[in-house]
Image 1 (cartoon, rainbow, N blue to C red):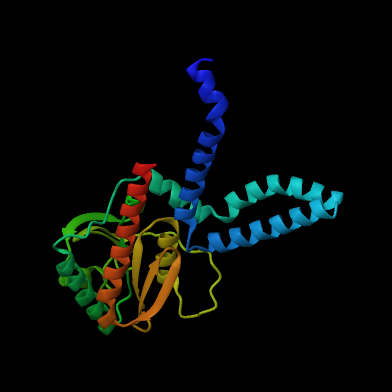
Image 2 (cartoon, rainbow, N blue to C red):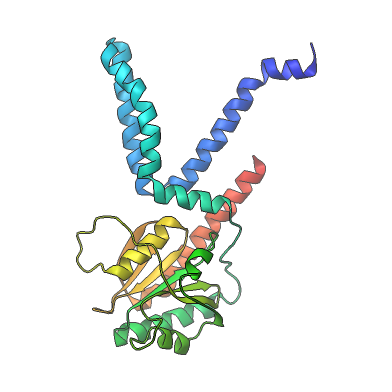
Length: 265
């Protein structure tokens, strides 16, 4: 028996199981803590229960319908989970990182000072922290700057009489990459009437990418954080620095963990 035939006969199944395990684990890493994970869990639970009942009780009609439903489900999942799929695919093809380095504290403090000023003046604002997934497509909708961040520049950009105040600002480390950028609006149904277009744009960019968005309401001056398709409203300015550090550190740790696990696999 040749070595190749031996591998085919005895190692094909373990290799297939290993590949499938890696793929499923990568899906879990990209979809955990999202609405997709909750919906997918519910659908799979329902299908498992119905399949079990159809086998035990010999329900041939239900069994036949379930078999046909799997094909429909595969197409439906692509439609339902478009934001999550776009974010996962974009992450696979990107190598950009929002690195936390020695200048992190200075950058965070500048951000907090800027947000505090905007909030007090009731200047609406929208920021997106670029992470692994680059935001180049959204930069093309605005004006590229490549300027060092400062409270004065931020206040100027979001002044109601400037041309760029209605768009979003893209940040990478302590640099402003662009301003006046158009972000995708979240299509999620909102019951809270205080959520306006800026909030929807912040949610939208966090749904389609791994960016973290900061939103300042023009009407109330309240500060919100958007990450992973979720929104945290009414963040106190005094708590913003700690919350930003926590989110940035959490995602950096997750990214490093994923890279290590991928290299081991």
